[in-house]
Image 1 (tube, rainbow, N blue to C red):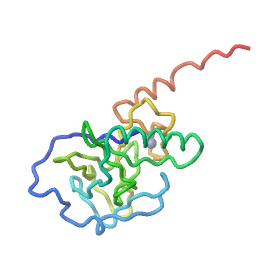
Image 2 (spheres, helix red, strand yellow):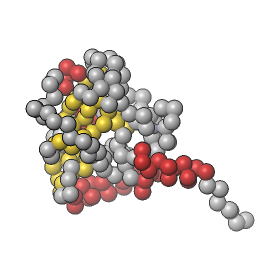
Image 3 (tube, rainbow, N blue to C red):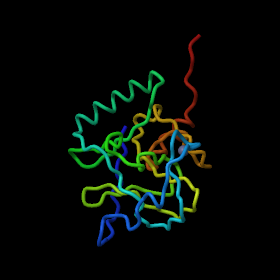
Length: 185
Ligand SMILES: [Zn+2]
């Protein structure tokens, strides 16, 4: 499963680099959501470009191969982390190699950040004011297809229970409201 980049309205910017070095803004720590998380060191205002999502540029074929291998590992109870991000029609970015601290930002069903594609590069922006010590999160935007492989532990009031893009969570709700299957005896 890959993290699709939300292509929102591109704001005009004189520079693509974050105005403040990310190391001054954020740090990696253990997270209650999953493994490591990324936390604000200082107040970060909504709209701020926090950090670039970097990683190894790989073809779609290689990306599919790595994701299939991850699912095999996950179903054996091993590491389920994925750091692959949709970049464009031909390439993805794998943050596992050549990535930075941004790859540890966890998913949340009520996130305070988003991802945005600007001129072929992926950036993480604050969508809300973030206070020091608060964990940064964004919507991984996973398709509904593999929902069962991606449980969510974000702990928010409206957590969908699984990491599924906000615009597809209605499918999870429909599953939850479906009658239990009839069992033959
Ligand atoms: Zn959740």
